[in-house]
Image 1 (cartoon, one colour):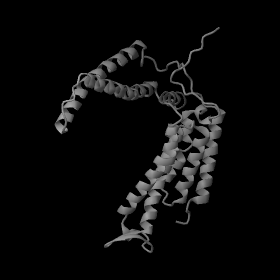
Image 2 (cartoon, helix red, strand yellow):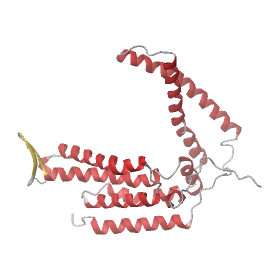
Image 3 (cartoon, one colour):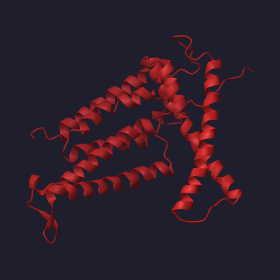
Image 4 (cartoon, helix red, strand yellow):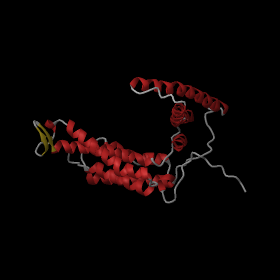
Length: 269
């Protein structure tokens, strides 16, 4: 029986969830034109339509978890409401429609035009985030780097160096938690108050920096041992190919995005 090498960083494709089987670059290229257009739109219907499109793609192609459900159902709508209200409060009343008054406190008034501008801004930002989640929730960093190196011809020295640096972040989080637990075991609380908190954080920083230096040295030795940067090309153990389904997904997403713009964008403005 032959042994099969399994890449621990490869993206697993759950059954029936097509987004996990697509090239990460396809999931970035498909919503990118819509995200660029959303920077310039000012109406409510266009970003709302793109939010519906992003939600439909995520619900159909991504694995549904409690975290994803809270993000889509609670976090993003709440963020749109908070941003919209905040922008409405800061909008110059002289530059909006003042025919409808929503709220009046003393000499200050919240007009319907200001609220519409604020909600449009909030929906626009949420639409951009929702479109970005299509790639962000269904792609891994290693696969994205591999795809950029293989399809976009990004020099592997740049791609894999950035990936190695990015992997420092979760390791630092783990080491920080270990250091905190070690301090608690030793009873090194140091009292309460801002000065005691500053002293505790200083006690965390020194060993964390020492661990970071040791880890950086190990990574550098490992890269040198593998002759990293010695040759212009490297053999890839895990390929991330661009398939026909990637082209179909990008083309279909662009067609739907164009249809949304034709149907909802206020071309008369």
